Structures are given as structure tokens and as C-alpha cells.
Amino acid sequence: MGLLERIYDNSPIFIQNVMVGVSGYQRNLTRYGKIYYEYLNFLADFDTWPLQRKLEYQRNELIRFIQYAVKNSKFYNDLYKNIDITSIRDIDDLRRLPIVDKEMVRKNISNVITISNKGAVEGHTGGTTGKSLVVLYTKEDNMKAHALLDHFKRRVGFQHRKMKRATFNGKHIIPPHQRAKVFWRYNAACRQMIYSSFYITEENMRYYVESLNRYKPQAIDGFFTSICDIAGYIERHNILLSFVPVAVFPTSETLTKQGRELIERVFHCKVFDQYASSEGAPFITECRFQNKHVELNSGVFEYFEKGNHEVLITSFFTHGTPLIRYRIGDSMKFTDKMTLCNCGLHAPIIQEIEGRKLDYLYTSDGAKINSGNVANLFKNMPNAVIHAQAIQNKINEIKIKLEVDTNLYKSEYDDFLKNEFIHKFGTNTKIIIEHVEMIPREPNGKYRLIINNLKSLH
Image (cartoon, rainbow, N blue to C red):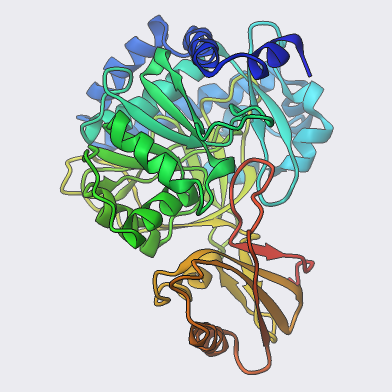
């Protein structure tokens, strides 16, 4: 434990709030400089461009980015040594370049990066694979990425740093020995109340809701499951809220249809999804009609192979750690046509973001059931399930852990859920339901709906 952490942990809460605010002001220096404001203005103008002009901009940025990587990254210079880079003149030409995965980047990270640690902004990746990676961003890329994120929110009515927000994340802001039921700290630098996701239990949730009612945030963002937990508690206990946010912006996790509906029903506002990554993937954002648009100024998406929804990404915001045809492990479905959305944005529309490719379970004959379909099996359950987790250790067996509200849950609900799973997985799959006091979170503070311990069958 470092000195600052010891001081923080042993300080009263009001001093901790001051320290959180100071840390916020320090981060602002790498996020909100001249480049940030210039790019915000550019994005407002870019929204008005016709599609062909946007695609031409994307093509030119792609050429510049590949040339930059070859010139400044030893890894890419070596990887492309037998390829005529000048022949890469269009997005279709990307197929001439080899695919890069996380393990390749990790093993060669010192040759991949183009900048020194000094003055760089660090990003840390994780995910369902358990593999982590530290990437470096230039300050310019970091500011552009934050400008794009804030521009997305501004399109639907929320102005970052001018309006109040509540954030549910995995930051360790609560000292382990704290006894007070105060599971949040205030970041004055961004008008942001940060709520710890590690203490959201049935016993503690009333304190979270009371805090939200006092704070009255104009937007809520952060972990989707944490926001769903709070929304579910509010609905179960018929709690009256004293505020209505402009919007809710979940991050880090794949949204489910029933989770979105729950949040919108409870908070009386729309949920607007977004896609990015700690590595620095191109952005996909939802417009005011909740259609998912590719932000063409941020990079390129390709399908990994024909008939497979897994994508490769090339990101224009990764000059510090270039990512070109990077196998990020996510899957998504694109619409067949460049449909013009009613919002007026000219950009490709994503039909569905399917999430991490490892978020699935197997049927007994080896078919994959992805996380969205697994989540749907719980949607008709009465509102008495607090958390659920499906674990697969054998091809023909699934264990379902349930954390429930014992005052509302009835034993026959087990039979209902088991029947739902059997209809999806078949009678050859054994379904075991186990009631537990608490389903533990991952080290990053998130819940996992699916834990698949089987090696890939394909």
C-alpha cells in the first residue's frame, strides 16, 4: 500500500472527497485541453456531413494511421515487411494485412508501442478471458476519445461537467475497515458522484437509493448490472424517486433487453448504449432513436471471417499502441444497408452488439447459446431474483446460482426456471439450481452472468 492510499484510507470521508476531487482535476489535465475542445467542434460539424464525405475521411485516416504505425512501431514494421503498404488505399485492402490478437500484442508490447511511458496515458484491459494488457495512449488521442464520448452524450441532452452525473464503477474508493454506510465519494472536478459497485447488496441498496434521491443526478452511467441492481431494488420496494435523469449511459457490459426496459421503467428516461474498449476500439453510439451508429471518425470494423459475427478493429485513437486488424473478441451484426436514421446521422447502423465471444453456454450437442439468449431465460421470472449466474463445467450440465429476495421468492420459481432452460438446452442437459447468500463480483467489480469453464469445442 502506497503512502497516498494509507492517508486516504485513514482520513475522514470529507477529506476523502477532497482527495477524489483533486485526483479528478489531475485526470482532467489529460482529457480536456485545447485538442479536446477543437475536436468537439469538429464532431459537431462532422455530424452534418453526407455519408460519402465521412467515408472518404475514414479512408484517408486509415491510410495515415497505417503509415504512422509502420514508421513508428517496430512490431508493425516487421509484421508488414513483405507487404507493399502503399497498396493499402481502401478499407477492402485491409484484407492484405495479417490479423493481430491480444497475445501477439502482449508478447511484443515493447515493440508495438510508439511512445514512452513519460507523458503517456495508461489504459488497462481485462475481460472475460482473464487476460490483462496495459496500453499507452497519446494525450491527443485521449482527448479526442473523451470528446467523442461527451459529444455522444450531448446529442441526447447531457452536457458533461455542466450537469450532475452518478457513476457506478469498480474503483476502490471505500476503505476496507469503513463502518459508515456511505458507499460513494464526490468528484468535484466533473460534478460526479462515484458509487462503489462492490457494496451493492440487498442490505445496502437502500443507502444507495437515498443518496441518489439527495444528489438528484441528471445522468447515470457505469456498470450496467449495478444500475440494474439499483433499479430492481427501487421497483421491488416501490420507492419514489425525487429526480428524473436526462439519460442513463451504461458501460463495460453487454446490455440485455429486459435490463434496458427495467432501467427505463424505473428512472423514466431512455438508456443510450455505447461501445468502446479499454484497448481503444472504435466507437459505436446510440442516437436519440436508440439506433447504434458506427462513429466513422474513430476507426474501422471488419468481420473476422465470412459467416462469423466476430469483428476485427482498427482504431484511429491508438497511436501510442497501434491496433490494426485487431481481434478484440467481440461480435456484432451490421445492418445490410446503409439506412439513413431518423436522427439525421449518415453512418452505418449496428443491428446488435453480441458481446464477448466467450459469453455463451453449450447445449449437449455443442451448439452455442450466447449471453443475450441466456439472459432472456430469466426475463419471465418474477421480480424476486437479485442476481443469477450460470456456470458450465460439463458439456451436459449447467449450474445456476441464484441470489434471491427470500421474502418474495417461492419454491415453484425453481421449477419454472428449470423448465425455461430445458426448453433452450434440451432434456439431455442437467440443470442444477443452487441458492446462495451472495454471488461474488469479479475483481473489477462487475457481475458475470456466465462462467464457461469448458475449452472451446470449435
